Image 1 (cartoon, helix red, strand yellow):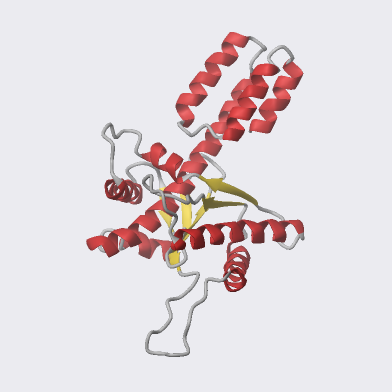
Image 2 (tube, rainbow, N blue to C red; image 1 turned 45 degrees about the vertical axis):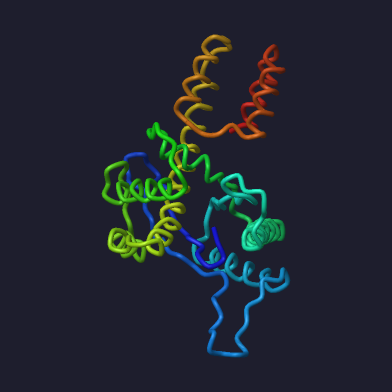
Length: 269
């Protein structure tokens, strides 16, 4: 997520688990181009009225090109590494994130592009998902390099079957070649993040559906349900958000009523 470096990854989920995932597009975009320093009239504005038009154009063109079913937007933070100050550039990126959500919500409500759902994805949860095997604590740069290595393994087919089609194939081929210096790391970091976020969400979504089917197929034996929930927690390896905690609390309060309990499970999945 960024104004200069916005990474986009278009994934196609297969109809069968035996078929590979397909990635048709994988690229970095610039929401706002850097002005030409040699041109005195070429300027750049990050005022909301100017950035809103750029956000709308990018979203509208992407919807028309890909016709997506699910849209994932990386959730942004105001502070990094425990800092006390909020940088102006960080505010701009957060404003862009809010505009993306606003544009998508407006288009869906107006029935212009109604056939999609939007999810905000926590980058911290994605990092924990892919780097769960690291016992030592990694700093920011080490984390970026580790995620790049995970992306390389995925491209090499070491983790899951994936087909890189069309333009994304060229990006995948040049992934190793572009690593070099902080600039190369930044470019690869953005691309790796977009790929890993999409794949992590697909894994979570599949696990949620499997767990839901298992729970709904069992009898109302509390001990068996408890075992299934524990197994699901281990399998999903995802964060517990505020909404998850609220749903868990509702399930606990509805323990004595199977009908209410099933309803709350439907809300969760």
